[in-house]
Image (cartoon, rainbow over all chains, first blue to last red; front, side, top):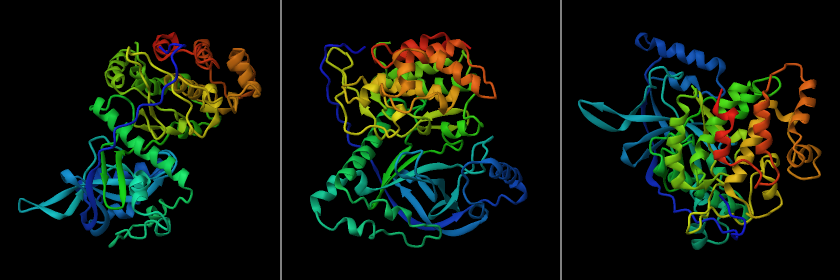
Length: 276
Length: 180
């Protein structure tokens, strides 16, 4: 409980976020063909999803059995992700979130190929044929502006992201190069602090809740390359609670539904309340 | 699936986790809760702060912050007035607003937590949520029944004075939350 006579205190600073190194590259991605016979059920589930989903990746990309693909993020510990299109700017705060497919290296004659991947099939019972993640992409300078400010003062924003390496992309819409263009320095600092704190907060939660029972969206991995910081999170295909309400003509939920979600929301806070 | 037999287990899990973490979110809203399958997850921790705790383990109030959430209806009145605030109480305020929106849609809500807003005055200062809700229920065509217990809980969460507001453990003990 809060005692009335205690003076207010500043918030203790977060530990700096821990980032693992990665790189963007191009390579072969094999996609199992959902139209072949043994993949029949996959095709069916895909159609079911396309009809009603809020967000869906482009099916044409999934149909290709093999292609040279750009936008592959290779992180340490052999984790690779195939970055797809932007899905939202809002539900994950002020940054772009892309959908992504976790990849695994293709093995040939028992050896792992370093530049050929295949997408991972989803778990049994999933609505989608392949595993998916959400990847929040923020420019490095947005997360760590103080590093930049030490080195360069003037004119740095004009170049915003022009030095990116994004060769060989067949599905790159160049959106993240616009991310870093924020002219007002104070706004930039605020957003930067938020971005950095958010990663620290997510890592704090992950350390305390390794099994993910706390009803907070977790960062599975945080990767940086020369240009960007990538926060890899589970993909929530049902959207936000707001979307759920919007589906009703009056924007309301049944009481039992509301209670269910309310319990989920409070679950995390239960433990945060000291003294119970 | 939420039924009462599984709920206590969750709470225990959460308890273990977040007592160590001591965070307040500060930007809780319907838009920042994502759904995966049948379960919601809180996201957008960009404005979260670590809650200060004194040496004897007492939670301390936070100093007023330069930046807060963008949606005025979710901002607790004490934050709106730029006063020192209890980080946990402001999150519970936002959770109350979310529950209110889930049960009644946006029309029952006040637009800002200021005494000049008549609905805020009525609900959060005078404690007349029931009257506001009855007036609203008479106007909508598709009746979704809301129990008196739910209204009682909401009323106790949406108190302008943070000291009168239910704490997390009190919400958990409320019959509407516990049963049903």
